[in-house]
Amino acid sequence: MDLLVSLARQLKDSLRDIAPVVLVMAFFQLVVIRQPLPDSLAVLDLLLGLVCVVIGLTLFIKGLELGLFPLGEGLARAFVKKGSITWLLLFAFALGVGSTVAEPALIAIAARAAEVVAQGGLISDTSTAQSNFAFALRLVVALSVGTAVVVGVVRIFKGWPLHLIIIGGYVLVLLLTLLAPAEMIGIAYDSGGVTTSTITVPLVTALGVGLASSIKGRSPMLDGFGLIALASVMPIIFVLLFGIVGIHLIPGVAP
Amino acid sequence: MTLIATFWGTLLDILPIAAIIFGFQYLVIRKRVKRLPQVLVGFFMVWVGLSFFLVGLEQALFPMGELMATQLTNSEFLPSVAEGAQRHWSDYYWVYIFAFTIGATTTIAEPSLIAVSIKAGEISGGTINPLMLRIAVALGMAFGITLGTWRIVMGWPLQWFVFAAYLLVIVQTLRSPRAIIPLAFDSGGVTTSTITVPIIAALGLGLASQIPGRSPVMDGFGMIALACLFPIITVMGYAQIAQWRATRQRLAPDITPSRSTLLGKGDHDAL
Image 1 (spheres, rainbow over the protein chains, first blue to last red):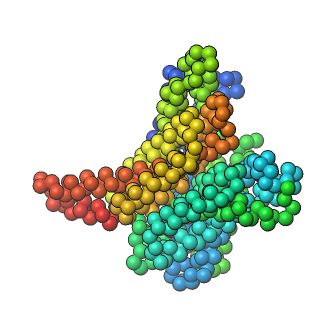
Image 2: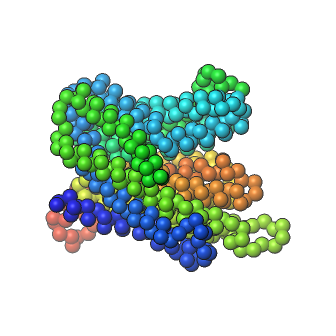
Image 3: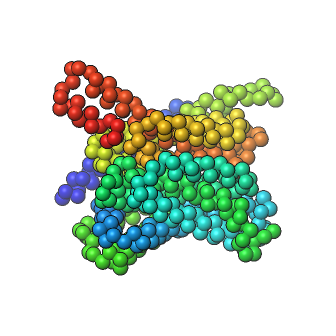
């Protein structure tokens, strides 16, 4: 019964969150563009889609609060209690890699990137070379996210200030941008954005906050956040490096 | 058909994560999960919710957003110019307004941002208002996207904008309350997950293919890079304003004592 009441409250919040987009789109469609919708877009389908969005958002947020958040924080606390940092780092790495390697947005971007790179003459223009490249790129991005979560967890333990690491990362990105082949720059910047998927973000946040609140002398606010920031800078660095060095090391792709 | 495909896709997204979590829970920690049924129900709701959400986006928001992006950048829609004359950048004013409003409103509805703001509100003990945080992120996002569309119209190199934004981020970092910095950096990465990117990419693509001399491949991604940077700046700005107001209220003589201690705690460190 409690669940139903809190679901109803969440539904109200979801309606409030979706309403602005719908209003903006309706305004532009009715006042600015003033053209009839094409036949492929029926009003009924649009409304049905909006209902799906609202219901989906409600269930998702409530599910996070019931499942992902408590589990992530509980696990973080259990690791700290157990006192085994090796296992914790292994877990962090596995979580980063596992949540990224199968990410649909990453698969799509890697395939598109292979085409761009083949057109640019960096790899040979065959389908095997392209699929090898796409797979290697996915691995590189997944490894970079794993590394980022590990670095972030070590940072929480040591209490290093985040901004120094991030600014250092920015400087590295700038330097590598000067060296990397032009085709790889866009791909690298893009890959920083796709790694932070809708499921990874809440889980990684829960992990960071859980760790920071169970380690003595760490504040959840000051130390608990920052994993996502690392997970969006690290792929850029890794992919730029991959464009400079790694691309020549994959077997069977040289032009 | 798309319904089943989406459910299957999100299941593939969740399964490896669930396997890692439960694997470590049972093999390494070797303790039972507290309130296991509730956690399992939560996972199930995340799966079903995310699938419905994505189906709805595909059905309604993405086609509408893409349609409007192409219509707004279409040369028939823009004010007419004399034969052979160059268009002025201000002719695209509806594009800028659309970029700003759609950027802000889609960010408000972004699930992962909601998740992070819930956590931030929880652990800050109420000093951070989740909705205000989301509005700050949304404004930054909207500004970044609008700047991105303007850059495509002007054809200026992306690097200038990114470097300038980096510089602003660094200056802001030195001046804001220390406790907000990690959250601010996180909110830059959070914004580009589900809703915003496809609509923004469509807008960039439409704009870049309409204006002679712009390449759709190179210019589409530039908006996302900028959209990631500006939320960092606005979230730090929000913290600075909150801190400034708290200090001012504390200095005001007619404030009730209970409230002033609350606010006093709420500035430098607790924020």
